[in-house]
Amino acid sequence: MAETAKVYPIEASRASGSEATGFTRVPNQMADILCRVELSGRQYRVLMAIIRKLLGFNKTTDWLAPAQIADQIGYSGDLTNIRADMRELERRNIISRTGKSITINTRYGQWEQTANRSKSIRKEIDINPPETDRNRSAHRSKSIRQQIETNPKTDRNQHPQKKDNYSKDTITKNKAPDLSVVPEWLSLKTVEEFIDHRKSIKKPLTQKALTLLIGKLDSFRSEGHDPIVCLEESIMNGWQGVFRPKGGATAKQRRRFDQSNYEQGLEGFEDA
Image (cartoon, rainbow, N blue to C red):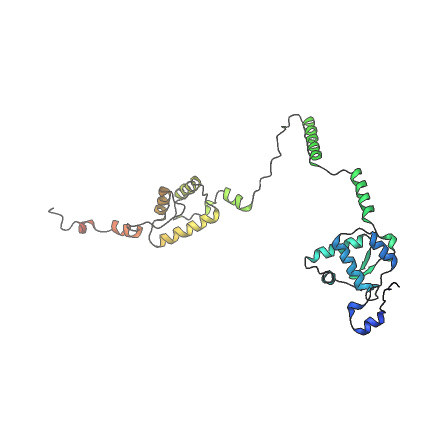
């Protein structure tokens, strides 16, 4: 005598407290279409997880988050892939979503088969062939020929000139500084010579740099140094900046020496 399968009633499995011995009742029509529908491996697992979460708990709809689905199928990757699989199932009318609630579409005739979708894609490719490298080259050559025929003087290798990318800093560097800020105690001619010197060493003087230069020369002047001498030394040595003169008397010391009594300096040398 053949041994028959033993059926466990759902009520008994609930009473035992073991969820693993329960049942997920799948309608025969759904089981039949699940045998025929073409899905990727992960999409099929996502769909089975949704069926388990809904039909396994006698629900027609429920709020299912992608993290729940990933945990159900043992997926530890990026949840973006799970969301993409759920969107694909929704696009193919296998499931429907209202907010975060998911429902399985029981109108199985509306489920879109991969074979039909591939057929429609092939039709679309036949109507609009994809743009290949050869098509792009032919289109570009045709455009060049049309341009040459329209304007015979156009050079085949001529390219449109790029718009100069002038920035605020570029304009500031190319613009000559305003010399009206040069004070009276500073020689305008020497400043112009220093500006020309900076241009010659490819370090043009900006308006801000001129203001800082005048401030620095003023501090040297307050210490008794001649600002013109500072500028001339920078020009002579090819320096970019200005510095205090090394060694020698300051301008104040030289003026005091000029005003001194030279006769006192000749004492002891009369009979020499």
